[in-house]
Image 1 (tube, one colour):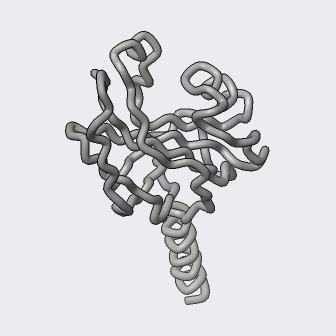
Image 2: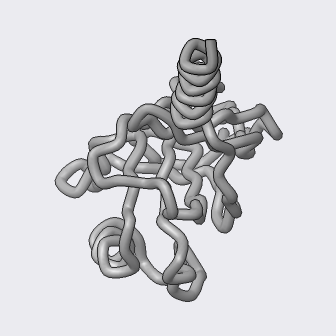
Image 3: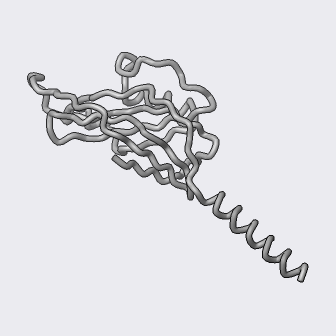
Length: 157
């Protein structure tokens, strides 16, 4: 009888451990840049192909920033060493660009899930001679404790 009870308790503890390991964990984050940016036809040679990029080191972020942005466009110091940087861009098909803010970020099963909420709408009409596209761009510091290089990133709007 004791063996049966021990087996049952061991099984219950193992299932609770597996459930705890497989659930999504909330991750600490801090938005430090969000704005509408116009990408013109001349930017296409250095277009940012991905709508989401996770950079785990400060060096990765500095290379990214130096390649795609001038210091004037993103006025900031280097991020905290304990934080990763998440780049998000949401293209707009019209001159009314929907803005977003981060509601929550979760990590689980090698997936980083970013939940956004609409925050504002920016109207970008009236720029003479502009022949490009508009994007809502965000940079978010994310606690990198449970992050990996090859994580799948899901953005829920």
